[in-house]
Image (cartoon, rainbow, N blue to C red; front, side, top):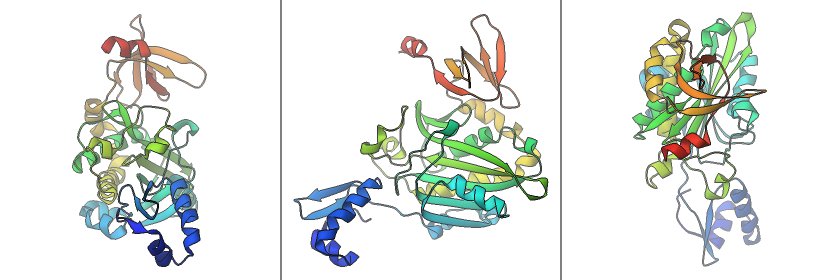
Length: 320
């Protein structure tokens, strides 16, 4: 994890395996998404140092309001997904403020059933469990969480992030992260919301082709400098946990002005993909309830609560 060169024989001795087994172990690390460089065929190094997620380092970067709201925080080497793990915990009466992070995910979740690329030790995969008294209390929560995520990135020195309705975090039009909120019924008629956040801190070049849209990570934004995943995880918790504590009372209203200011596609010509049809128009803002307003060529406006937004190719060509 130190990014330095280690001789083949030294690795075998440190790990406690035969020299012949080192190659297989290195191959397994590469399959996990770690990039390994061979030096003259006798020494090996990680292409970039690996920063483990660490409870003590996260706690040291937490503000007191967030630290007070954490019921417990778990870090796992690997999970199917952090959202799935906390959804199961919610069914076992885990309290609000349960936080889960993972070094990697076997089946990370994106929107609309997509898989979230989750190589080992490279990005932030974080989920928070919070209970609400009724389903209506979480209306617009993904938008408010997006505002919190943008503010968190600014707090660790990553400027220029914006939002794409309903839950994407962008940087100069390229996807940096996303938010996935899943809700289930819980004991006593309450609802459990799982707020999942994925942020790209480093995507290995060997895996980037698997992402089906323009993407970016914090290392590219910072010109090759690594952003601390522990600081970024703490920054997200500092913004999200107080928001969740207050949200049932405040709702989306306090976050609307900031969301509109951060919105990347305001006034752009887009295609909205619904389950069974596509609708073209120009984004004309957001309702106070967080619905997207789309204006067609005749000036008629429609509001939508869900859908997949993509910029129309012809509109991009005109802007260029």
